[in-house]
Length: 295
Ligand SMILES: [Fe+2]
Image (tube, rainbow, N blue to C red; front, side, top):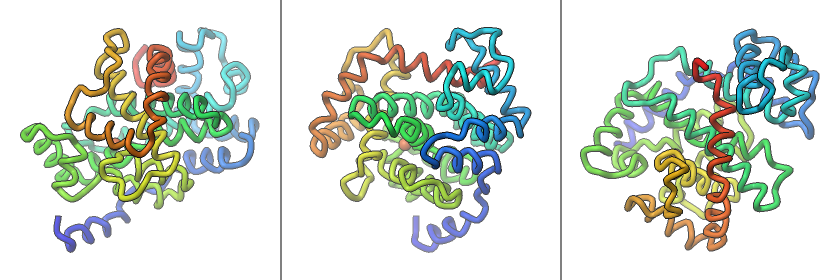
């Protein structure tokens, strides 16, 4: 993409959505030391659709409280504030984008499954690294890491469709096709993160989760989401039962994998330890996204 075209695209940032009030309030609530439980309950109750979705997930088979969770207060008590915050946040994000026209090449259900699984795997990796205090942060950075793809598929459909066509006709990855077209979802995601005034930790994860296009050594959050992104793709593509414990199933992943190990030799151990929990992590993500399905 020529520089002038790029600048024109940047000008279109103004067209990007402002954060919905509910998301803004949830982010504010989570930035404080501890989630304020009463405020969390009030935020969720302010939106009947989100309230219904949180209750649906809380009563889903995954959590084992079927038919027992009638109020948000009880959901917070039984599931914990973090789980309820994450369900509300992902439901609000889903609500924000589900009304818009999205490229026919974009599978929105797969997108949410990948994003949420990346969030759950990021949380697990943070725990393995001894950062359990950043647990909620970790889920959020994973959940939002690919938000630029959703923005491209919604607001830059022409470029997005070109990327998909180039990727499938040339057999290259999405990120490589984006590099050729000149519009990276990592950059587009960064525009949204800044427009929504989300925390720096989220921007780091969005910008640096593809080591191949990261211009410097990624910060810790970028590395965590990079590993989680690889694992999430591996888990969801292969199905956890068919796991061969081998990530080198395509040239692009191998390139990214080798680059990751050259920067962070410790990543291999983390990858292997997280794979041991693959079934549990995928189940958890599916359970927390059950509001997406008509069950
Ligand atoms: Fe990505």
